[in-house]
Length: 232
Image 1 (cartoon, rainbow, N blue to C red):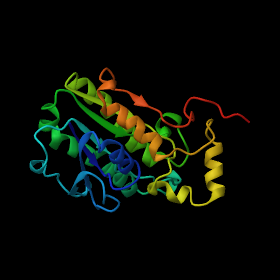
Image 2: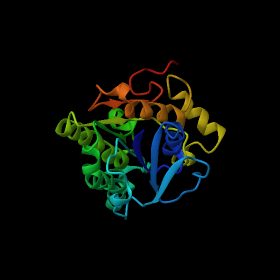
Image 3: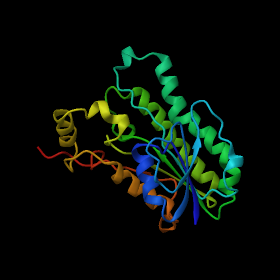
Image 4: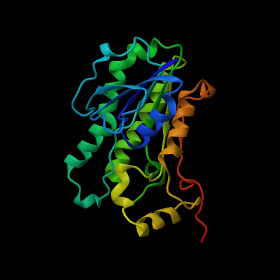
């Protein structure tokens, strides 16, 4: 069985992925809370990615898969954004992720071929108003992932999933009523909002040996938003 570590797996996409992986893998979840984890066949590690250093000694000597889920959605006009907002977004989305990966390098390189899955946003490719802060931090992830994939090939594969708005607790305020949900759905060529299952299925594939010839890629799981015109 593979050893899979999910950073931030107590809700949303991480939780859905843990449910998907638990039967055929040894799943470890490092997150701020163990809420929603009861009944799952996983090992829980208390961990706040923005403030803590992960104690790798309590993990197996080999980590075959790493998924970094913590993130932010700060959508505001640029003129009203303070530098602190950019710093906060960079910290949770990028710098904390870098620290986790650096700490886990010995365990990742001990795997026959480890897989790292990171998360970006459809806004990085499209250029959306009010997304300057989140797009900056998510764009950093995409550039970082390609460089890391090149540096550690073939030992570690690194890929990125770039979703559109997905129905998670993080996006709750943007989907808080039926009108908002319908407007968001209509912006997508496939006419619906993404689910945690949509994203978790892609992440599961990228962790699997079926994707062993894939690395350094950005996968837009976004209902067609980034590449297709919406029918009028």
